[in-house]
Every structure is written in structure tokens, then in C-alpha cells.
Image 1: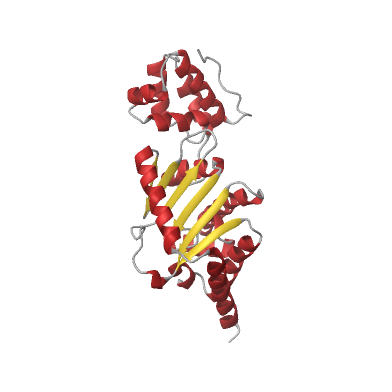
Image 2: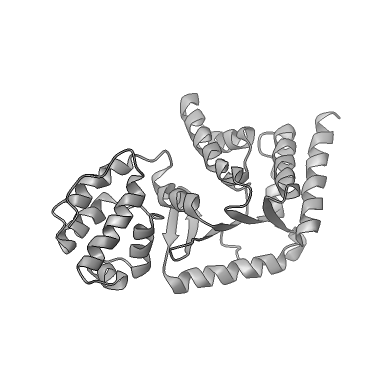
Length: 278
């Protein structure tokens, strides 16, 4: 039975997940059986054990009660620390950092992982027009930190589908847009990301209801993330995730091929750059 506090110098989330697996197996429970006792899915338990999903303080108390771990998970849950991300995005951001592949549809703005500093700052100013500058600085820094995932030359695989509205909406002025789109084009040309654009001419498509992110992992079930204005839901139900995966497949079928998409992105970037000097 777990009894010692975790070493704070290690990754608390990964260690907690490993300890949860040990305690569950010692109790003779499957992930699905433990999920029923905790009122979550077996997939959710698998994500916690793999360290792709944090154990909340509320769940930690229930785990201690169900598995008889004498407060171990409650004591150590706090060592995960406060996230720098908004509450509705915490789990998605942490899962994103562990993903082998990320597929994302963006209907209105450039995905966070691809934003430049100037573009991100303008987005946060729009979201919080009365926020003090230090708050905007903190939010922008957190977003740029997420983009460091792309420093690895191959993992995660990032495949984005952008609505043409993302290219046409002028965020922060034409200079900001030129820089932002050139940044995306440079990542495509470096073969670090795959991007497709759904042109306005494609008409209705499978994801008109809003943005979508799909994440796949090495040792845990896949996740889907959907979001709205200040809200977000991380989904692990296999049937629901599969339905969203089909939606994404339909999006790629409606979008321009990658080469044509790159041409459109670079053309828009050049138009913005040219317009600065006119």
C-alpha cells in the first residue's frame, strides 16, 4: 500500500499515476471496475495512470476511500502544483504535452501551438480588454511555452485544419498577420507540421459547430477536446472520441491538399506584408 509522500523533485503526476496502477491492481480491480466506483470511465482511469490526466483533489479523496490508501493520494495530489493555464484548459494542456499526435481544427483563430507572440498578445487583449498588462504577459508566456512542444523535430505529430476565416481575420493588424502566417508556412516547409485549409468555397462541412482537438498517446486511450467561450471539455468515452475522429477525417476531405493550402497561406502572408508598405 502506498504510504510515503512522493519525491517533489520527480514528476508528481507521473508518479501518482504509477502508484494508482499499483494500488488498483493490488485491490484486484480493472480500470473499468475502479472507474465505476469513482463515477468516471475506465478510459479516464487509464489516462490518470498513464499521467496524461491529473488526479484532482476530489478524485484523490475518493481513490483513498475506495482503495484504502490511507490518505496517500490526497496528501500527494497537491504536489501537482497550480497550473498556469485557465481551469477549463488545464487537463487538455497537460494531455497535449504527453501526446504522440495532435489533430486540431481551428475555425476562427490560429491554434495556440502555432501563434506568434504578437498574435497571441492581441488575442488575449481581445478576450480580456481590461486586464492589466502583467496578466496579458503571463497568459502570452504560457501560450508560447506550450509551443515549445514543436522544438522536438518529430513528436508530437501536429496536423491542423484551418478554416479560411483564420487567414482572413486581421488580428492585430496586417504586420502581425504577415508574421503569423509566415511562421506557419515556415513550420510547414520545415516539414514539422501538416496544415490544410478549408476554403470558403467548400461550403458546409462537418465541424461548423466549433473547434476540435484530438490527441493520441503511446500508453493511454485517445482524447478529444471541444471548447466554447471560456469553457472546455476533455472527452474520453471511446464512442464519442471515435465520432469526433470521423468528423476530423471529413474535414480533411473537405480541405485543400497540403501543397495548395501552403500556397494559400503564403499568398495571404505576402498580401499582408505588401499592404504594410502601401
